[in-house]
Amino acid sequence: MRYISTRGKAPVLSFEEAMLTGLARDGGLYLPETIPTMTEDEIAALAGLPYEEVAFRVMWPYVGESFAEEEFRGIIARAYAEFGHVARAPLKQLAPNHFLLELFHGPTLAFKDFAMQLIGQLFEAALKRRGDRVTIVGATSGDTGSAAIEAFRGLDAVDVFILYPHGRVSEVQRRQMTTPSESNVHALALDGHFDDCQAAVKDMFNDFDFRDSVGLAGVNSINWARVLAQVVYYFTAAVALGAPARKISFTVPTGNFGDIFAGYIARRMGLPIEQLVIATNQNDILHRAITTGAYKTDGVSPSISPSMDIQVSSNFERALFYAHDGDGAAVAALMDELKSEGGFTISQGALESLRETFASGRVSEEETSATIARLRAETGEILCPHSAVGVHVAEQHLGATPMVTLATAHPAKFPDAVEAATGIRPPLPNRMADLYERDERVTRIANDLGAIEDLIRERRA
Image 1: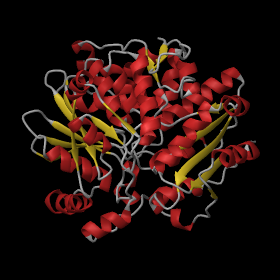
Image 2 (image 1 turned 60 degrees about the horizontal axis):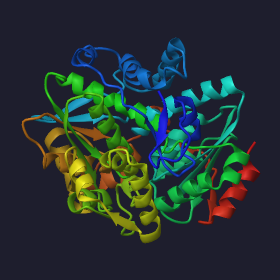
Image 3 (image 1 turned 30 degrees about the vertical axis):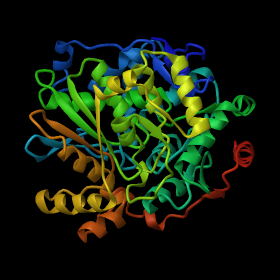
């Protein structure tokens, strides 16, 4: 399996090389040259299997040249050993034909753990074999950073620097990033919003002198291994509800488009997904893009669902690549226009291609809070605000096909929003009960690329 850039000019890499590289040197994102498919019989055979076995069968065609079979099985086993639910990603019924996929049973209580725990194990195995050391730099709107720190803390061959927007994440999200004591992890509070953090990371990758001197690697959803790990739970959920004998739809609360793009890959692999519904909060660039064809940044408004407070959705570039039939030059031109003009217009052909798979919806702050309150009253289920955004949009798209809404975080990660909506302050699990008592370690930094690079050079072990 070989990996190519969405912009068409970077070297073709193996899975391991693409994983360790992160962002392609032409600024694009790596994708598999071909997408493996599974037959109906192969999909049906996943029914009743442990999550780890499904993960192996779904991901193995993408990684087999880089890892031995038993090595990869061991990596998967270690990645999910600390999850708090034996099913890893259990389904819960909310209403007739509407199901919630709980993705918050990992170490940091968010869906990012599914990918980050796996990628931590993959990095460790690959770097030990190579005898290399890397510097991981990531941007987070809240959950990626804590999941990355949890996955890489204490590893010998990795230094981790996570940029998050100062004052724009929940207290639980912040403390999960700032309380680990291991010397190889560093939380950096950037004066700006998430898009500033993400732009700084991309700029560091495009500063080749810096990139090469520190051995830069990325674990944001720009990293293909992150997307691949998320493909798995689409299969487990769909098969549990009767696939491949019947179609399933999914609604995904998303800001950076990585989680829902994983569903697109599952669909391309043969999983009978009827519709993928994009659920956005008031920062609704993805909804506007699908409904109008105009992908135009419009400023970031802080919300009670902060992990979705994004206006530049990196993984949308991957969807555009397929919508343009793999034309890297066309994608590169759109990304140049985004950088210089703040947006672009999707061509009619590409927009029709996107609409064949994706629908969308937007949820206001008031609707989010009302959904949290209503679901608590009707079902007893307490949703985090991001999951509530997904449920609200999913309810607008219910039909004969079973709908699965992705519950992306535990409600205790956003206790203020949940308490305001329900009067109930959700407690942290016992393993995190002392989180508010732990000492924090954080560096506040200006939105200045040179200052960030200097700090990383200085702090590296």
